[in-house]
Image (cartoon, rainbow, N blue to C red; front, top):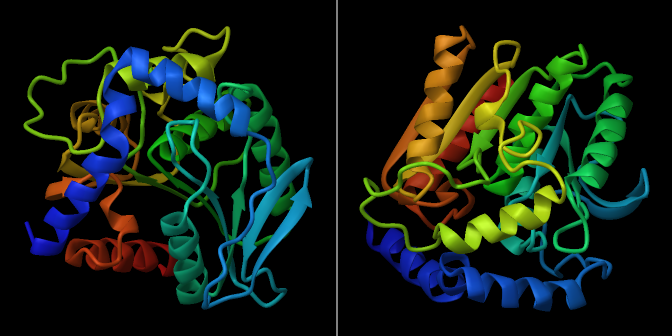
Amino acid sequence: MSKRSKIIEKILEKNHREYIDDAAAAEEYLKKRSAEEDETYKIPKRAYHTTVESKNMFGCQMLTFNDAEDTERMVIYLHGGIYVNEIRLPHISFCDRLAKKINGCVFAPIYPLAPNHTYEETYEIVEKLYNHLLTCGKPITIMGDSAGGGFSAAFCEYLAVNEMPQPENLILISPWVDISMSGDYDEVEYDPMLGVDGAREMGKAWAGDLDTKDYKVSPLFGPVDKLPKTTIFIGTHEIIYPDIVKFYNKLNDNGVDCELIVGEEMSHVYPLYPMVPEAKDAFNRIVEILLD
């Protein structure tokens, strides 16, 4: 592990671990987020590689990166945040760099979050966006990190169940594939960011009245045989590492064209942090996939 990776782990541990590791702390955090939610997201002021805009699309605030007629590819990016936290600067920077590198347009919905909202509203928004992009006739990729990665996989399973066309690629960065947190996590040596009990409470808030093992919120338990080409990035310093390996094995057993890229001693969503050397390799691999 590089020195920079260790620094990132310390920052993650300081800023996230407490309310994700403890059920009572998670409940207090959910109350706090309930009071803060539904405010319009303001794009951070900084220099960007592409034109970054905020639009209203399908009843949802939508960030677009490089939305121009001459772009060659379309990407739906679903941000992480345990279905509770808003999109953050690392997501914005990643989408901006990606849009520039692939000459594509990236759409990042500022989707409704728990505890004030559940999965249902976001499904409706993403389905409308996806159907709209299908009419453009350009290759579409669906991708996301953490909770957004889990939602990306679940949405593609939803497309299969409803006999709708799949995107060209599904790219998942540390996807949260089991919000019930029902697995065995004892084998994970260390995770500076995520815990089990708090995450489970936030998963319940996102699922609403739905069983937390329903595929629409936990794609580990869904039908995967019709999923498109899938690439998964995961670090060994992630509590959800065993669940993601199970998901990958399920894809492989069902004949899906899939690749699992493991970052040894890497933390949650490490490809989003460009200061981490291993993130550069992950980013370049994603670009290679999209340009193939």
